[in-house]
Length: 477
Image (cartoon, rainbow, N blue to C red; front, side, top):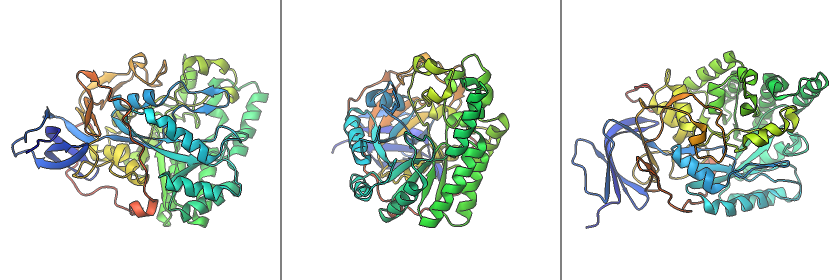
């Protein structure tokens, strides 16, 4: 009789819907059994004792940019670097974007190029498509993407002249995504407001990085969300808003859901923990991203929405520029590369931000289960027989201080430098392989799989209950 590859013994297994003391039995890259912890530990090729620790599903980062090109800037990472950093941070699946670099690259080609590059990944990878402008080939291209297992399309309501899609394009793509059982992703910022505000700041000589937060007002985000929700209601399209940074934007989604719309709110760790005073700090270029950081009052209200369950996922929006790129044009935010490295720190920053008011189950929901379910990623986000053996063991009481130079994201800074955080992974298992433990990182090689996603409605009930009754425990417990 053959023995399984791995048993994680005596841990507290925490899913989004509850917890249990159990031995997790792994073989062939899958979870084959959960055995009550009161029972003997079964024989296995390797046994890891998780006594006193929590075992959660490997993270699913639904918003991650790898090898991204923005104008003349390219992020410094590749799939090997970013997937390695993801695993160090307890994330076992990343969802990247195939965004056309220019008018010559089609949406289909952008995705196929990213899929080719992803062959170097150490963790599993799924992809979003992106449409910038409409032409008669777009419906066929979206059909091809769906056949490839790419069931979502991102569009930007700002960034005119580069990635921005106009209203006609957004509405037409939404209609196609309904036909193809897909999900529409939206970067929501009202371009005319941002363009005018930025021009006024430039005319006043207030266009350096220290003024970034005032060039992109909260109103611009919220009016764009409101307008996009109207188009989604008109077309019947499920819609997902990336990196929401204001409680007003989240409330608009909550109200739409109350009317029966299928709509989701995502935020990012930096919007939960950093406020706009960072732009008056010694290194304001560390925080160049769009939307920018908001006021301390807005951050506090956003955290309240997260604790209330109104925010459905927390993703990194990982973009790996370095400080030399950031510092080229700190004098003018219009020419800076925007985006922050964060795939490796998503787990501890989110966990720490949620600690006072949320359960571990809530954390698992936004870190793993919600991103997997909403994005129709099969086999992810749950510890149960038949699911992929993507697992993280950690002690919620362990504290570490962020040292940007010791991270693995291919850049030379972290916006969370010096912060003391809880919730770092001690052991990470990806597809049944132990890739992080007390011996460090064990590079599995380019074994990451491309994950073809299911149709949105076919995969799950869009109104599924967020969590089942369970004995709650605070994140800090």
